[in-house]
Image (tube, rainbow, N blue to C red):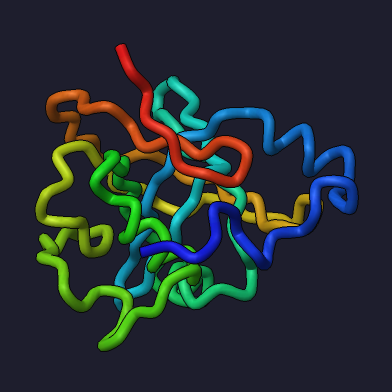
Length: 168
């Protein structure tokens, strides 16, 4: 049951900066970044750069528990999220309660990079290479050391403050 059709805590459209409004009009993949600790964070500001080696770039919150754990471990996993992962995405974004902790209630596979959802068939193991403040976020650059690419289900996308599913 939902009481509101919109987020009652969202910044009103007219009060958002033009840059934030532009960003909201760009569809973004929803991913889960996890590291030893365990700690995790939902990230949709992500880019993958092909090369030798390939790299992942992402914008994260430098005050997050995830960043504190990543600074210690130096490695993390990036899992793609599917339409059925909306609650998981909200939980790791801090938008939904997490009784027992972020990792409670799901099955996880331990990897050298951090826990990966047991039902995730597409994920990458990454080694932190650098970070720097960029705008109001922390730009993280990492080398991709391992890729598991299973079947390509419909991705979970974030667009204008809501989740969407790509239909083929």
